Image (cartoon, rainbow, N blue to C red; front, side, top):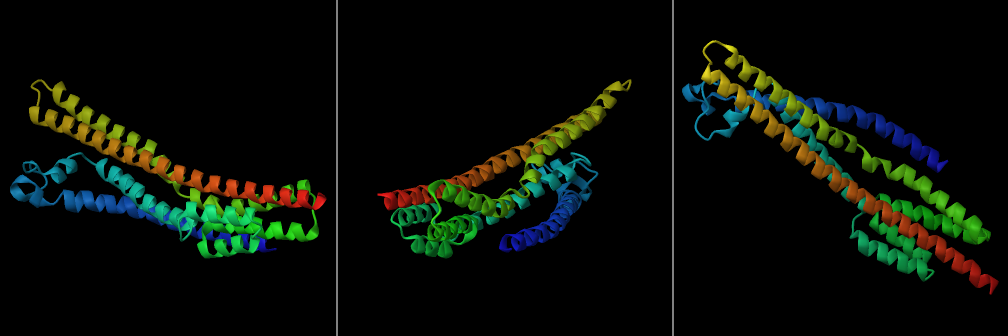
Length: 276
């Protein structure tokens, strides 16, 4: 019953979270356009005080503005990577709990091996977070099967099933929005490539005239390179953050598996001592 209530709550949170995610994506794209149009395209960045003029020397905001209409999309993608990376960092840090995760795991394993299950549960209550919640579920089930006198194999299956169910409720939230960051890896590259192509089309268009327009040629090449650089920057940041968070989640999952194995082995030793 408790698990059913948790599942329903997770589903409701997921629906609300999906709407918030959509709002954030749209907001990032709008903000990207605002930055491109009103900050990078401010007249103060250009000769003559208008954004139709040439960028002032060493004014990189104006140079990026000249990248064309694909730039605000790339800026929106870059903002998405930054915003969702901050959001994932906060969520994963909270899931690890209040204290140091390694110290918590060492304490819990020592308590379980010493037979102090109540002490291990108290440590989970103090630590809080997804990892502690999953381990606590396994410890509570350990006490239940111990009172009922399950055999080692029955207890192993029951405890592991409880840990798996608790994990299925807690851990998926850690991977939420990671798909967006991973999508930005490809989307950033593709959007940058699109800007590169449009810039090169303008450059070749300038060459196709009877007398090549050197200004249009330089502008087209500049636009192509600006979009390439912005797209690569977005993709590189997305790759770094995605791998970072994936590594963090793997560490949390390993901690849960390690604790589950300790709980099961402790019960087996307990049953073995009864036989002796």
